[in-house]
Image (tube, rainbow, N blue to C red; front, top):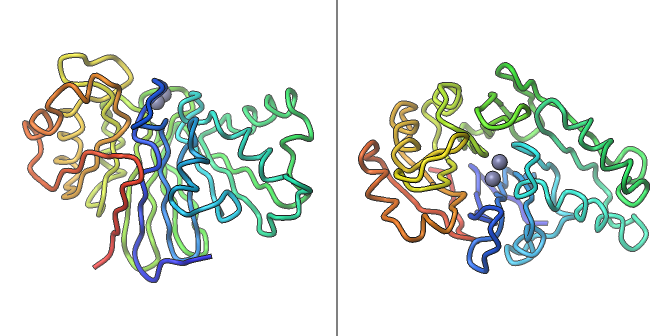
Length: 263
Ligand SMILES: [Zn+2]
Ligand SMILES: [Zn+2]
């Protein structure tokens, strides 16, 4: 398994939403820190995109869920089921799954439906819940995870990953405008921010290009990736709308786009 020598390598696996699209798979981001491979959300199509990014589900060390909407969690069950195939012996190292409070309940509900089909060998699956009301943090061997509640679902949280060599990437998941993202993303090297719809089509619970830009500017972030595009975004000038409130480096996510965060 390949490892990243320094910094954080980001691969956008899916830049879309629940809307079926050949160009934009549902939401998912892969981050590599040292030998750790972290998956953020696993909407439908994630496992195929992982293979296209030369990664298998057995390479994953951590899976983090921003919230449980199916366009973000839909392949949790297939991922666990495939991990057992053919005899559960291919995964040797533990898989840590983290999300906001409610994740254990969510998993137990799935267990009630799927039973042993999604149960890994004893000791292989660890489930971690982060606080969904306050900022929270946990440190692993090669990186730390900081979380903050965001405005979308009860369980929704955003993540900041910090490598031991000083780099940081923030992934918002789905959210409306909220101050907690500004604090979480303060001076981060990269902010991966949801941008569901163009400014004129704004809906509660989601961001638009100019609101995402405002968050990045207030957080002092110089590299912004917009993602989670409904098809309406591909008909609008997303970059121009974002430029109303942000003048740093701007990237519009595409599936399988790779970004290396290092000096
Ligand atoms: Zn979504
Ligand atoms: Zn959502």
